[in-house]
Length: 280
Ligand SMILES: [Zn+2]
Image 1: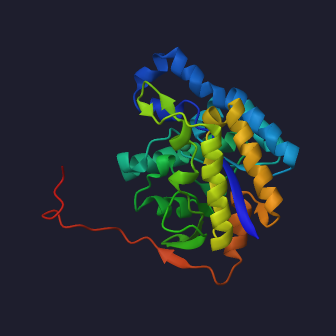
Image 2 (image 1 turned 120 degrees about the horizontal axis):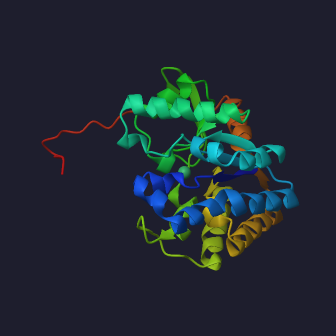
């Protein structure tokens, strides 16, 4: 059986506020982002309920604080809520103290909603070499941010092992749909048919290669009507294949950890000679 994960990063306003506080003054932009928790999440929850499928929702602390009812609805539907930072800054743009402070603020925000997360997804998939150490230090079981495999593996850290559930841009709706003039996130707005072909082709190839299918969607993007229908068609394609099982990230991580033959890996920082690669 191929395991397939439907994951939803409920970013709401956070990734555009990272581009500058002034974007909070743009009511149009803020409304575009609010669509995720207000409309996208309920529509996605209804789709998941229709097929009785589990999913994982990575919720920034800011979203949890601004939209507590959205988090409650996700939990009431029986889905996993996981850690996605507080404010959605990329760790590569923070020092370690700022990253730690944001990470712990996110834990507190989720705790206020009764959530103790088992997993972490780094904002924008831009961790530093230190990030997995921080995740393991806080007792989380898995990470879903790296791209050096397409199967789960054990990521060894000083603070114990994390299960890594690898991701990829080709299975991220951001690259397909994220168009906004300001801040200038200017992916083209792709047709549903093209996106469905991309994702079902990848799923079929992953079935052949024994990979873990991890789809990452953002409710402000994939919650729109035709894009929800892409998700429906993808689900129906997977169910028709009869060898695909939908699981949450938490479940995939539990199963991976129980696999004695799982690949073990340690992050080896890339150290470069400044004389060869000068800072530009
Ligand atoms: Zn995000």
